[in-house]
Image (cartoon, rainbow, N blue to C red; front, side):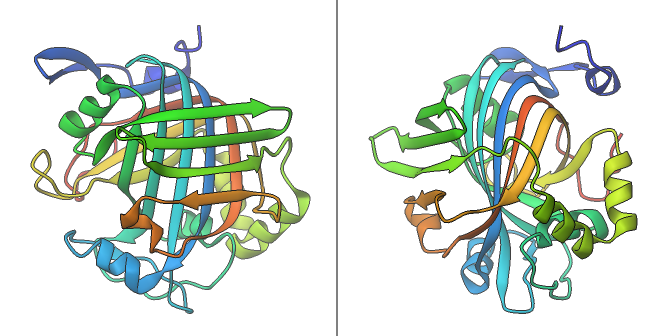
Length: 282
């Protein structure tokens, strides 16, 4: 069974979350599926305005561009049942940080070399009511219900995400990398450094600390440590034949410019319970 993995033994389901009067397992676990991670930059002033209600400062580069990412996920096996997800995230820290060097892979360097980097889950859409309510009420995330049309054929993945009224949230089509681009990997190594890349490759799981936006379910910005292990993973630069269009008004004006695509299949993922920023992962 895919759930019989060291990741889930290290971070097992050890509690229940009461959501709408029903008990659900905690922490949140994904056992299989696919993830498309599209990283890039957006207008720094617009992202600062987006995070104005949070106690967070966006990470920006020396050209004033903020580090932003879009996630498109098809989770086929999970402890909340199968569901899809679209996430729009900004990278930030609880204390102001100096500008980072402009680079297509600046997000990876920030995660690898700046310990205070946090990924703010700002916009979140799921395909099931269960996932929406769990994400909102238990994890404090800004989750909404949406309809997902995701199609994979050959080496292409197309998607359209629409809200409950039928308005398009985001859409696009990308070529799914079959293998990592040697050019991309060399550029990433040069930017992060050989020591940093070696350390990343030695880690058994990809660790990303995620912060919620403040809401009635989570009045404070809390940190949830996440851990991912994919069966296969490939990365390349965003190409001329790739397309992503964000239409949701809150994010359409950010001026998102994608830099790279990372695609993972056979996803195993754990999202631990949110804690104050001073708390350590376990």
